[in-house]
Length: 383
Image (cartoon, rainbow, N blue to C red):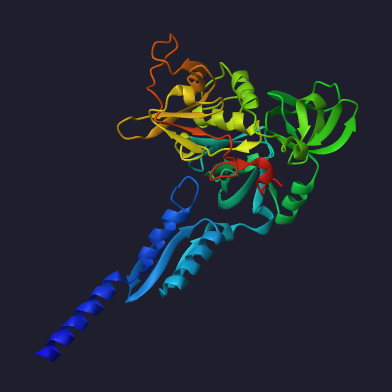
């Protein structure tokens, strides 16, 4: 009887241990939460299934770094498996691993077709990592990690060595709201329109004019007053005044879903443009921006806000963030809703809008370098 009890106890222990044993499914689930929780910033479609009593991993990831993370996690867990995972970037030739946006503004979409929804915009000189070719479109990842599709005609492709040379080259960034690259100093024939944030390579100087080159090699002249040398410009410290100046410069401009440029913008695009003018790269969407910085929860008195703080609005019941504005002062904030405009947080004010009080706010000041807030000077894609 005692022997039977011992055997039963051992069987129960083994069964309990087996139930607690880590499987490839568990490992993948944990990894997804840690390194690819947001499909907007990571390609991750991997699954684990048993075939003939053996575990098989299949599906797609975007980068080799993700694949290496899977291999390391599986090794650590002791899981044995057959690898059938495809890495998208492995299908891209070395000559097209990287690209620079070559237009003043390029439109990126949610699918590889012109009829698809606009996801975001890229501006001239913005570096992108190429993940996948889809006919005449490319799936790319931007410096803010956002992933979308862009037409081949909007990109100037670069090898790794060409990108290293670009990062070391003398470059200028457009600091004027808008400008033009023209065929000759003081001329009027346009090579390309330019918008704030465009980056071009230096070629020559003639008085108050600079000869610059676009990422695809087109050269022209620009008034030196409209640009700044990139390495010097990028050293600027946090400036709420600069952020406010850019926001006010955009007053009255149109709303465009997916817009992230001085020509047209959406709500989170406005905050991105304004912060980029101060050398800071924010996350793409309002719901992403709301998870960054020093977070102040709902109910914070507006008197606690500082110029430059991001205010997030949305569904009060679910907490879902759908809108963002930039706080100014005296209860006022600037945002893009229909157009870029100023409204008040004070219910009795004449410019109090239909929006409710903020679900939360985030202070970017003092938080540059934390998750989702990157100084352009410290981004390895630029320097």
